[in-house]
Image 1: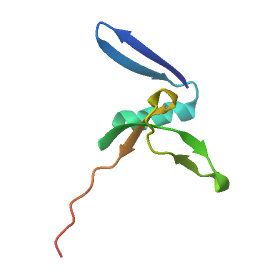
Image 2: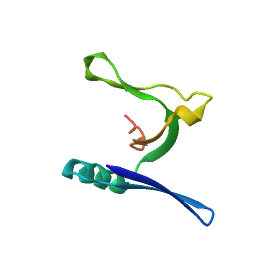
Image 3: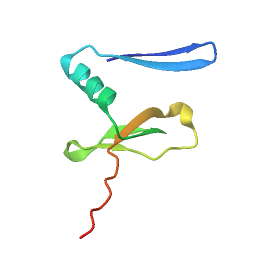
Image 4: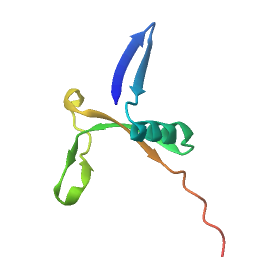
Length: 80
């Protein structure tokens, strides 16, 4: 995936350009997402067992990744 940051006339845009079918599928899922979007910063790393972890946001954000997290909207509980 190619990425670019465009700053122009007081606005900032982040462009993600897919290069594979899997990346196109992921971007389609993001486009269709109707839940909650959270913008975070932190560090992402792989750990044992194949898991990926995100560390909490540190004070020095210059060394952190920009993380966009998509969560489903919470559904209200139905009365019993």
